[in-house]
Length: 304
Ligand code: RI2
Image 1 (cartoon, rainbow, N blue to C red):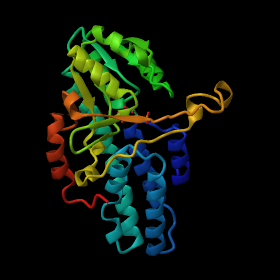
Image 2: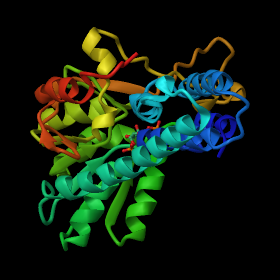
Image 3: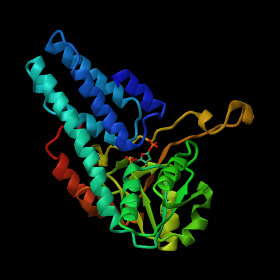
Image 4: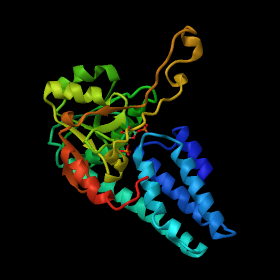
């Protein structure tokens, strides 16, 4: 898919999920690099403006920025077209491979925290969470999953259908049933769009409600996140922009009086104190370890 189609598909949520968005961005740059270029100057200018265009598609998930930074690593130092093409295509393929591999590893590592007979609650639709649940199921564990509807896009339906296809016992619940159903839940596992340097997790709106309800009911709360969901910018005090989407996703103009305002934030932040562990491809880490991992992983990178 070319850059413009990728940007449109991400904006329209045809491509969604923080990991998918990152891989799609890397793939679009890889594809663009393979085009015919007149000179290296034009190539650099166009590729860097494509990066900005991709970044403007959705503002919250840092995975997209990290995927693009990975893909563009060394590009500005390239002195000829063939060297630059080769570098971008190789970086793009490597990011996609590592990203898929990270999700698979998270599945294996996270599944170990799921006990036989467990009732799991999850929110929205995270490929990393689905991998954990499916891996536990493949290992013969009897599971029961509560999938929240996740208004307004109702990605919980995707989660429920996907798990049902695997033969997993899954129940769809509305978002406001979370606190009530928490009494029947043994573990909550959610995905992440961005993880900040102080161990807070930005994920689908409503995630923090699950965390509070889990905390109140003393139910363990796990987050799945590849290390490219960690935001190095937050090391410098930058805050994460929370995407706000169109009011039409919540209510049509004819459903409400013209004076009614609609506020549609897409993500929220769950503070580190409500998170028992973050399942990464490196292992399960405490929210407090995120800072050290970021320094190690991104320390020498130009993160801006
Ligand atoms: P994976 C999704 O956002 C959800 O918030 C989900 O938890 C997160 O991305 C991570 O998904 P959206 O794109 O990377 O549906 O684990 O707004 O697939």
